Image (tube, rainbow, N blue to C red; front, side, top):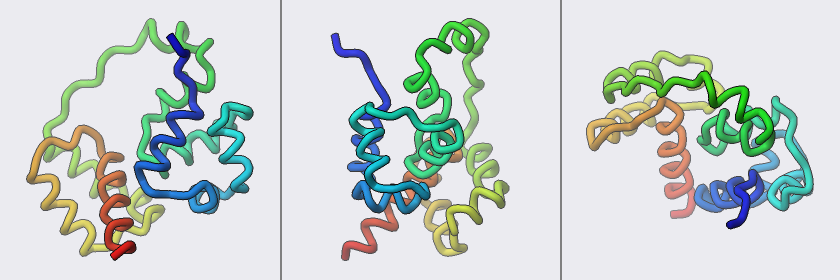
Length: 144
């Protein structure tokens, strides 16, 4: 069984978002060669970069942290309690009230309107998932 590492996950998510290494590097403020190193597991990102990667790629920060620092699993895993399930209205409210997040990702009013429609389709389990959906919509529109 192959050990799960950060590199393949980054590559998979980057490709799912139809981003090149260069495009992802620009969004993260690093060189494209650094992305290549990360994807081949030849480098470990700093905590700041790891946080930016999570935000840009719509990934869970704790999962990424544990992939980069598996030795910390014993410290984190033993005290963690499962997060309570939130209804879709609560998740939507959290997303729309996070003005810093909306500003950082340049979410426009018309995009919020579309995402509110998406919210009606089913349960979105975390506010950051709306960013993943929005990025997919933005890229689909750009390619047309």
